[in-house]
Image 1 (cartoon, helix red, strand yellow):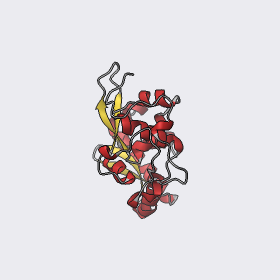
Image 2 (tube, rainbow, N blue to C red; image 1 turned 90 degrees about the vertical axis):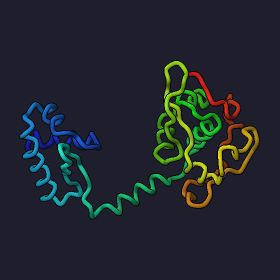
Image 3 (cartoon, rainbow, N blue to C red; image 1 turned 45 degrees about the vertical axis):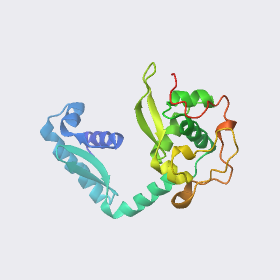
Length: 205
């Protein structure tokens, strides 16, 4: 492929979302009108090589996508990823936020004593946590809270049904989300070092 076509492919792959024609042209220092012919070259390359990828033209933007015939297998693998078992680290972070929401990543990291960004991002991806706006403390970090999916996964009607934080409780996942269940008993807030009392509602970063 032409070097410019390869560079466009790299841009679209790295972006993972639609990229406007003007941004592509500006990045490559070429006229806007040159972008479409280069996209056609890239699409021809994918078609001739029987690739699973395709170039999607979305108004004034472009994006890499997967051919429609592969949609089912993509849905399957993404669902398996979403339903993968929770690690002990994920259970710890989820417990801390459940009892202290909204809570920031920094708050979780202070309780756990270890970086928790990837764990929290994974819980957001699974739909068990969501952003809850900025917390009114210095730095105004993003707060995280549990979701309705969290309640369904743990068989709870509301957050008021959470067990007391310093008691050993059976909190296995139930029903439609059996895929989250783990063989080991989940970690409880009582086992967390310096775990705060439930429903504190605020924190400092």
